[in-house]
Each structure stands twice: as structure tokens, then as C-alpha cells.
Amino acid sequence: MDKKIIIGTFLVVAAGVFVWVVTPKPVQEDKGASTATATPQPLRSPDGSETRAAAKLIVINDISVSPDTITVKQGEMVKFLNQGLVPHQINSDPHPTHTIYPPLNSIGLLKQGEGRSMTFPDKGTYKYHDHLNPKLVGVIIVE
Amino acid sequence: MKKSLKNLSSIFYNLSIYYSIIGFLSILALLGLRDFGFSAVWQIGVSVAAAVVSGVFFDYLEQKKVVLTPGPFISGLIIGLVGRFGEQFFVLILISIFAMASKFFFKLYGRHVLNPAAAGLFLGMVILGSFPAWWGGSSYPLVFYIWIAGLLLKFKRWAPLAGFIIPAISTGGPAILWSGSFLFFSTVMLIEPMTSPIKKNSGFIYGIFISLGFFVFSRFTTLDPLIPSLLLGNFVGRVLDRHI
Image (cartoon, rainbow over all chains, first blue to last red; front, side, top):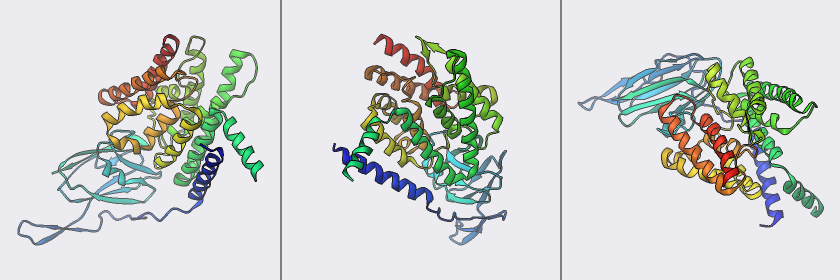
């Protein structure tokens, strides 16, 4: 391969990385949320009428996850909220590859006070952990 | 312009793998600064400082002179980027000291056999309860693919990579190829030149062995599976290089 192409590619990539680093990151959703329940999401009752139920909340602080085991219904919203002093990064088990349930990785990095929600459409048991402190673990059981 | 390109080209081709790794790890540190702020810098800075000081100390014990080599910088960067985020400074310092001490105490066929950062992180895990977080670059898998291109183009360290990644995909699924932690391990620690095989055949077998170790440790223990598999693989790789 031509040396100039290699050097040029390297320089372009290096410049791209530099721009990426210095560019301000987009504002994270749910920043600064401090309420105990999230925005209620409508659920359908058996007779077809809508009922409203609060999203289940999982609070992460710097030494624990609370509750560490939570049971939710299929399609119910679960919100992860960082009430600790340091960032936490919620990822699927196993650590460190996070491959058992990749959609859980969308929660990702939560800075202090940040929260992020997701739904679990399928029944099952979903284990997760804080990638930055792998001893903080939790389980979500979807029925 | 032509002369500048020629000079840059010359720099690129003369760059050693050690300084390339330091450059790449520094980019990961910058990305960590972006995500985590100065906490990341302190963590990495403490680890590097402790590794360099203890590295100089142990090298002095061995060689009776003060030498400064790239190795302790690399080990310190890795410990800072892989160690539990927000870990207490004294734990990071001890892990760095363990890492440099392992070069002094664990040798096979005349040179140190264990990946120093991995040895330090392992001892930190089992003695101090500090589990590796692999946070450095974990959100930027694309950066690792650019690094892989460089590794393959210039340093041709594809054999351990291929030996490790191919079996790992079959057990972890293709999603593993987008795991920043997995890519960090594969492209920085697995291919470390002093503790991984030089020959292609032995490099490939070494990669496969570590992949198997990763599978076993992740299924049957609560330890971080990558670190102990690498340490065992270091021994196997050294023996393979000598006898194959």
C-alpha cells in the first residue's frame, strides 16, 4: 500500500479523534432527576382499558444497588438512577464483555444524578453490573 | 510538503511498538478525561507514577543502575485504565508495585514471563479485592479497530489476535467484537511483545489457549476471566516459543 495513503489516513483519523475529544458531548436525558418515581407509562388491563403505573426504579449509589433484585412485568419500564457521587456504568453480564443481553448496555454511563430507562419485552432473568465497579450487581426478573 | 510527508512516513515506520502503545493508551486516557473528567487523569497519573518509580527501583536492584524504559509507563497506563474506576490511590499504588515486582521475581528462560500489568491486577484482585473494571475506551470500540489496523499493518501481531478472537466469538457471540473491554485486552495486553510468543504458530496456539482459559474462568469462577487466562497463557506461550 502507498506510504502516503497510510500516513494520510493516520493523520485524518488522528484529527478526527482530536475533534471528537474536544467536541462537547450531547446533554444526557433525565439529567438531575431526583424524584422517586419516573413518568408513568400506560399499561393495558385485561379488559383493554388503560391503567397507569410508575416505572420501577433502581437506585445506584457508590456502595450498593437498590433493590438488587427487582421483578417487573413484560413491557414494563425500568429506570436506573445514579444517586452516588461517582459515575456508574450499567451493562449486561458477564463482566467485562457484556454479551448476555446487549440491549441492557444501552443504559451505559450514568453520571451523578443521571438516569436512563428501558423496557424488557421478553420474560426472563437479566443480570447486570456496574462496569466501573463490577462488585455492584443486580438482577431484573421479567414475568 | 513532499519532504514533510517523507519525514512523517519515516517516523511512522521507525516507531517502536512500545511508543505506539503508549500513544494509543494516551488517546484512551484523553477519551477517559472526556467521559469522567479529572478523576480519570488522577487515577492514571497515580498508577503511572507508582509504576515508574517501582520499575526504576526493581531495575536498579537487578542492573545496579538507574534506567527508564517504556515498560513501566505502559504498565501504569494499563493499570490506570483497567483498574476499578475511582479506586483508592493506595490500592492503585500497590497494584503498580506488584506489577513491577512480578518482572523481578517471575522469570522463565532468563526474562520475565508474566504480563506485568496483568500480574499486578491479578494480585490486586485476589489480595485487595479490587476487581478490574476495564473502563478505558470501553465506550469507544471503533478506536480499537483503528488501532488494530495499525497493529496488523506495521507490527504484524495478528497470530495471537486471531487465535484468541476466533474461539471467543464462538462462545461469546459476535457482540463480543463490539466490547471495548474485550478489544482493549486483545489489542493491548494479549499482544504485548515481551510476554507473548514471537513465532506465528506459537502465537496462534497461545491465543487459543487464552481463549479457552477465558471460557473456563468466566463459567466456573467469579474472578475476572481475562487476567488469569492471560497469566497462564504467558507461561504456555514462553514454553511454546522455545520448543516449537
